Image 1 (cartoon, rainbow, N blue to C red):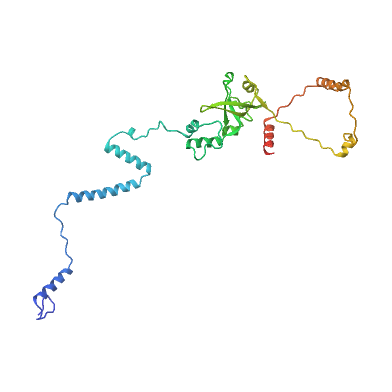
Image 2: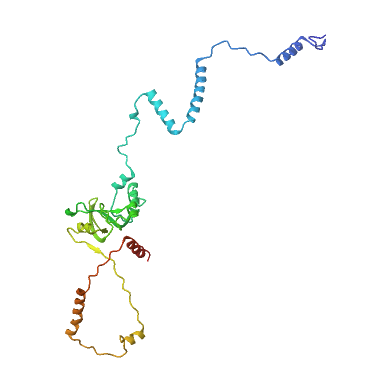
Amino acid sequence: MAYNGDYGSEFENDSDIERKKRKRSDLIPKAKHSTSGIASKHEVTDQYNKEEGKIHRFHNLSLDAFARHKQLVNNYIQYYGGSMKDIYRDTRKDKRDIDVIRENHQFLWDEDEGEADDTWDRRLAKKYYTKLFKEYAICDLSRYKENKVALRWCIEKEVIEGKGQFVCGNKKCTVQEGLRTWEVNFGYIEKGTKKNALVKLRLCADCSYKLNYHHKKKEVTKRKSHKKMKTSEKDRHESGRYSPTWVEPQISNTKESEAPKCQEITSIWSGPVKIQEEKSREEEMNDYLNDLFQ
C-alpha cells in the first residue's frame, strides 16, 4: 500500500509513516516570521552608541594632533562650562635661553665649573662662554671720567667684522687706523666676590686717552726680532776681531770717546725727521696670520 507516491508495506506501522513525514518537512526552508513587537530602549541605545562611535572614530583619525586637541578643549568647555583663560598656562615665569645665560653669566669660568654634575642653567652658561672669542675684549667708555669701564668678550658677529682687533674695541667707535694695544687689570665684583683679570684692548687714539684718563695702563708692543749675523772663523781673522794671542787692554781718552757721540747728535738734527709709516689693515692682518701660524 502506497502513501503520497511512496512505496509502502503492510508491515509498516503508523509511527514510521509519521517519522518520514517529519523528515521531509524539515528539508523544506521555513519562512521567517516578522517580529510584531517594539525593540527595547536598551537595545536602541546600544545600537546608537555603536554608530556614533564609528562616526567619531573616523572623524578623529582624519584630524592632526593639534586640531584634535582644540576640538577636545572646545567640547570640554561646551559641556562642562568655563572660559579659555582657565585653560591657558601662566607664562609669566617662563625663561628663554638668553635669560638663563644672563642670570648665570660669569666673566671668567674655571675648568671644573659647569661640568655634568652641575645644574642645567650653569652648564648652558658655560657652553655659551666656551664659544666666545677671548683674545680681545669690547669695552664701554661712556663713564670713563668716573673711572668705570665695562668689558665683555667678542661675539661671533664682531669676530667676523674684526671688531676689537682691526676696529677700535670701544663699543661706539668704528675707527680702524692708529690702533694701540693696552693690557688692563680689570677688577670686578661677581656674586659678592671681588675678582681680577688681565684683558687686552685695541683702541684708537681718542679712546686710548679715555682709557688712561685716571691711570696710565700698560701698552703692549710687538717685540722686534734681531737677526744674529753669523761670521766664520776665517772672517774673524781677516777683520781682526779674533786673534789667538793675548792683547793688553788699551785705555782710551775720554775726549776722543765723546767726539763720535757729538757727531751722532748733530747728524740727527741735520737730516729730515723720519716719520714712521702706519701699517694698513691688510698688513696688520698678514702680520697677525704670520705670527699665528709660525
